[in-house]
Length: 309
Image (cartoon, rainbow, N blue to C red; front, top):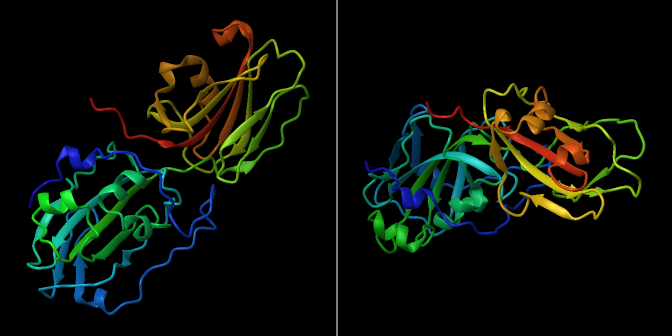
């Protein structure tokens, strides 16, 4: 068994959509799997924490992509191509039944990539992983051409050969804050608005900004409490108060990962918050580091693995 090389793990970002899902919450995500006799030829066993045992009648061939859940998780679902995920993948030859390649299966949750990066190598994962939940094990019968050509050649998958992929969904980050809306009193503060996919915007009032730091929980998530011992993964939007210009956004790239201690002011604002929350922080001029007050909206998407010692 060979390990997937680094070049295969670090894939270029593409923009694709995962079908059948609604954002930002996961409750509307409807998982649809194949109903095919082809999958009955494949048996997947073993712990989901280790490289699976795959028994298949060889030579195995399928003309169409088929997929099903061997195990169904109950965590956050993959509802967006931009969502960050950690998965392990095993690829098995349909011709010989032998494992061609596999990720390390070492429990390392720091290999975080957008779902779209995996679909560059395995385009059919766009459908096969749509609405799959954290903790799931998914088996995918791959038709010829379902694996990116260069990758297929590099692992010894012959032209016209079918294959089997087993995907273990280790971790799924939220696509956007999914907590319950909170009531906040106090006039003269910015209002947060949201696009259908959860991306926030800010309406800044024309009045003077507050003279002290203001922290408001706009949405209250039901995830783990942020205590500062693990890096926080968050989408961040920043807007200046006076000219109402965007000064920072991660929504056009990837969520940011940071330790609370690395940014004491934002760290104080996020300490004690929960994953799934959306938090607005208003900095007066004296605290903003600029010549005007600034407003930040943070969507807390998850906690990263502990930093390597």
